Amino acid sequence: MISFRKLISLGGALSVMTAGFAGLTACSEKQQLGGGVTDIGNSVAYEGVVVDVSGAAVPSARVVAYYDSWDQDGIKDSVVTEANAKGEYELKVKENEKVVLFASAGEDCGLSAAKLDKSNKISIGKRTMYSSHIAGRNTGSMRVVGVADSASTKLDGDGYFIFYNMPPGDITLAYTDDADSVEVNARVEFTTLGPKQIYVLPELGFVYGDDSWLAVQDFRYYVEEGYDDIQIHNPKSEHWTPITEIPTLSQDDSASSQVVTVSVPQNVGYLGGFLFPVKVDPKKFPSDVNTKHIAVIDVDNGVQFPLEIDYWTDSEALLWVRVAGVDSGVTELNFKIFENKEFAKLMNVPFSEGQRQDGALSRLHFNGDAKVLNKDKSVAKSVADSAGLLGKGISLNPGQYMSIDSVDVTFGQFSMSFWTKWNGPNGKRQVLASERGDSTYKIQWRYDEGKFSLMKGAPSFMEVFDLADSTVLPVGEWAHVALVSWMGNYTMYVNGKPVGEPVSFSSPIYLGSMMSPVRIGGSGNEVDTWDGALDEFRIEMAPRTADWIRAVYEVQKAAAE
Image (cartoon, rainbow, N blue to C red; front, side, top):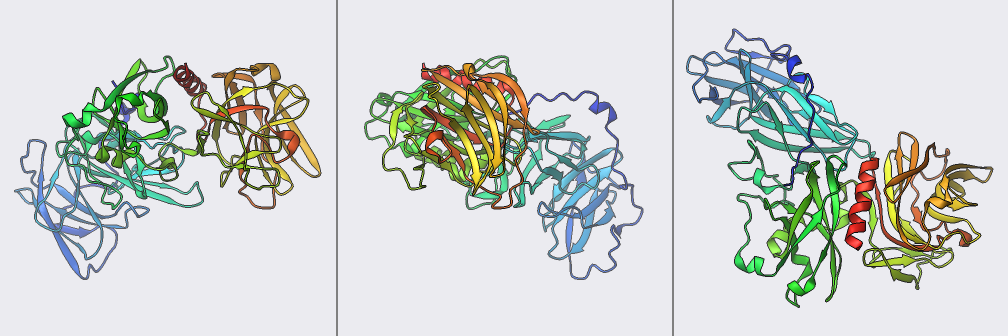
């Protein structure tokens, strides 16, 4: 069974949860301005009733209209009133202002999305917690809209966040991040449906084509009855097809399909946003199958997964299936691959549109998707294609390299990996990856004189930091190689294991362009070309753990056997 949550240790958090928000004491007047506003001017009225978990009216409840929304930095103002003996209330607020309604009585409270009619029922109950994480993000902050205090928290290094002591009801979580120099603002809206102590949303990802919305891949959360006591609201976006019922497969849909079981690595903890290579037998599909309409669901619960097709021929096919999360202890996953246009339309997107979903900056399967250049920067007309670990690979001629445009690996954390069948030392320097601008090398990951190392340099200097001896990399057989940057320390991995010692490395000061393409398999110098076949290259802006790297190695090796 697949779980879309991380097991979070709450420790003593529940024991220190406070009973209320500072500054939210009861009001004796029927309506007050909460933030010093002296003139409402043109106004609109929000009317409704406050009820408890049983649906009974709550007399004399305190009701606040907070001037707040997901695209603001915080609450701008508020208006306060008190419900009558029947739990009824009315609040007048400025016209054209976005408002969130909050009600409280004693220690119970609740949030409600405001509607311009008399149906603003606010259900109040015990305070609770919300938790989730954002795929591919480890910076930025999340805020609960319409809550005055303790309603903002930063994402941790794995993209997780948790809010304590929060009201139940209609919740909007607003995400903000400017780590990419371009500010990202997005939100997810959901309603809590029960008296749970903590609500854990599945992994959140950006809606393809619309970064202002966060969504989940499990359709069960979007239907009216929700799932796991959570009902996530469908994004209001031209890039999103509203989900009103859980998709089902007809007999025709399932006739041309295949179920593939993959093993999950053990003793690696939770795997979030993990890619599984899945081999498919094309003979189980009609000869005229439209590969653009291939979809993948989990056999056990019907959850659909994003995928990309590496290759699909008459005799063999390989898909890469992205699973939002797999809990520790899960031993296998059962994927159903089938042809269905409507399913495929929801999840199959180009990498350029969906890359933020899993934090990947670039990935190459070497099945015609690599940009190969000669030493003079001209596009190579001939490339020494070779058999890869999975499908095709590539071998570069002297002086050739692959250019990954608009990627800078010298700022922030990252993980880089690929498979290689190395021919061994050839008396020359061999470059795995290099980032340079004009005459400055910002970083070069290379083999030279019996060592794998990192180098940085400019015309006036060069510094080399040894990572590991050349003997760590097998010769003449496929091996998985990775480089992980975390807090200024770089670690090299071979076949899922760290080799050598972490190296402290910082890029040299560079006065030219701050963004330089990463070059793979060479530096542009003829003597630097990597001597061996390459396959399945990937850069992602996340410092993967040793367990994660090992899991990638084990899963991809198993798929190749």
